[in-house]
Structure formats: structure tokens, C-alpha cells
Image (cartoon, rainbow, N blue to C red; front, side, top):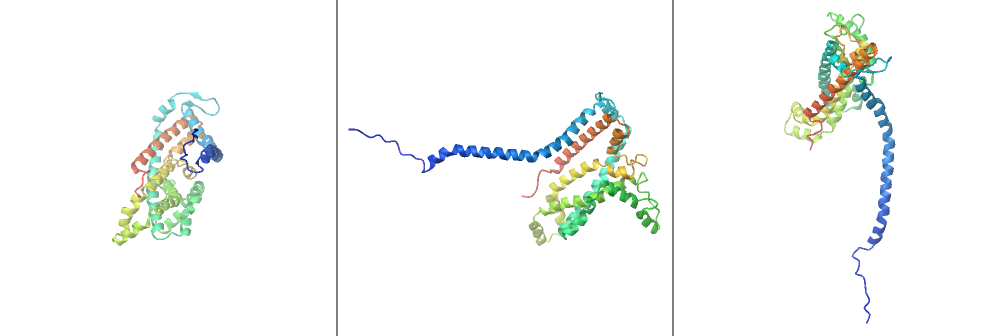
Length: 321
């Protein structure tokens, strides 16, 4: 008697065997699509990466190298080690320029941050008109050079319309850009006028992310606008405000063009900010090695300030649940 052998019944659902046979082809197709997406992403990233390497990474590395050399464009760079840094530490004009720059930064950041925050809160709490936002942003559309020239004319001691108004009310004319006491605060306020609208719109965007329900609940509880500002607005706006502060501090330390077109570092080096001193060393006296050393020092200072700001303000954290 012959017993027919039979294989055990398959436990795979219908069509599973076919799916198992076709899965490798599907995986290969997905891998091909991923490679295609990677190539496309590389094509789009290539211009930005090229610009980063050519205009940021290479100049930075070249500047660090030149900071250890004596170089004047006419002769090959001569390696001098840390001589430029020793000269910088013993250079009283460098330290004076750094002091002037810090004074400018403190005035600019203090006035600009408070003014921008007030404008942003008013735009958010009273009106969200696009026309008003455009008006607020208008000064930022003007270049620093043009803004400096306009304010140089307005504040001219003899012919400026600003001093004409001061004289018309019976007060003495003020040499805003020709006096050692007034020069740096005046330049700081010129740059505040130009940048405050842009800073305000950045803060306004941060305010838009705060849920309006919190303000409505606070109003029901009887909270005043002032109390809501300190208990709701400021804590929830902290991450955006921290990033804005980091950006404005970095930009303030790099002030140059407003000084160049208004005072040229005067009077008596009262506005000789660090960037202008570096420019004078490089393109005025052709001391590119020394100018590079001061630039590297500025890079280190800005990196340290940015790191401390980021940690103290907890810029990477938010109180929004």
C-alpha cells in the first residue's frame, strides 16, 4: 500500500509568497529613489556650500594663518609665530578701540532691544496692520552708508536741520559727531534708528507664536496688561529674544560703515571702533598679519560671548508646552 506524502499546509496568507518574491525588487527601487533624492539635494546644496567654502571657510582659515605671519601684499608672507599677538596685547590703541566698541555695543543693544520690544508688543496687542509693519521696516531698507550720510547732514553743527531746530528753540547747537562725548552715542542711536524695525519684526514673529488663549484667560482673572507682559509675554518670548540678542550683539561688534562715513574714527579716536582699526591696519598701513591677528581675537571674543549668552538665556529651550 502506497501512502502519498503531502507537504504541510502553508501558514502564509494568500499572496504572501508573491509579496516575499517581489520585496527585494521593491527595496531596490526604494534605494534607487533615495539615491536620486540624495543627488537632487546635493545639487541644490552645492551653490550654498560653494559660497560657504569660498567666502567664509577659506577666508577664515587664511586669516588665521596670516595672523602668524608678517604680510604686506608686496612680499611673501613671513612666519613670525605669536609676534602679532604679543604686539596686540601691548598695543594701547587696540585696547582703546575695544573699549570704544564695547561702549557702542552697550548703548546700541540696550536702546535697540527695549525699543524693539516695545514696538513689537504694541503691534501685537493694539494692531497687526501690514501697513504699519512696512513703515516700521522702512529704515532697514536703507544701507548703512546712506543712513550715515543722511544723519551726517541732519546733525551737522552749522547746516544740519537737527541743529537748526535746536537753535530755533533757543538752545546751543550740539556737535553730535564732532565731540568726543557725543560721537559714540550718536552713532549708536543712528544704527538703532536703522535696525530697530527689523529687530521689532523678529520679536513680533515670536509674539505671534504665543497662544492668545493665555491672554484671554489672564484677562478673565483680572490681570493687567503690565502683569500679562511680565508673567506671559516675557517668559514665552525668551527663546526668540535670546536669539535676537545674540544676532544684534554680533552685528554691533562688527560696526564699521556708519563710522567710516560719519567720523572716520574721530574726533581723537573717540569712535575708532575695533573693526575700523583693523581696516586701517590692513588697508591703510598694509599690516595684514597684524590685522588678521586682531580679527582672530575678535572672532574668539564673539564666540565666547555667543556661548555665554546661549547658555545664560537658555536659547534652545522654550516654556511653551
